[in-house]
Length: 187
Image (cartoon, rainbow, N blue to C red; front, side, top):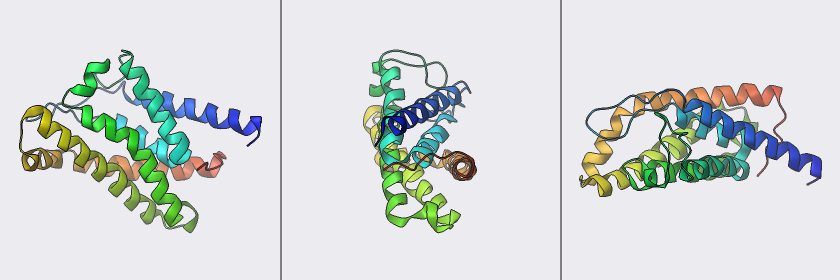
């Protein structure tokens, strides 16, 4: 990889990190029966995987989460700090870090981007993005909130309609952006 390519990938990574931050400006919607809000920010996680691939997508999300851990109020609702990772949303945040790696790996294995089958790409985001994040998040929520795992998983049903829309929208946005901007599709 040349210096020019490295600079290009790092710049794109920084831009996607900034996009995740901007999506946090939209306030979360409280669900009421669990202490985890509905947020738009997870669409940025899907976009990171879709646009940057597994390596740089994970770096973008890791950079974002590192800034949050340092105390910058970058999560929806202006939250930040290391304590956030121990609260009810901690499992979702950890899953956000792993989601681009999982999405990028599945997309690379199935060659969903180059196959022309947009529905395969959407299915991967639904499975590796939404389902994975919700299961990991609910598992931590159950431990942290002293709920049964079944109750925590059932509470995630409230997130599914919005997450399905955000995941589908992320794929269509990424496909349009990739048609215009050369992301190089790094591994």
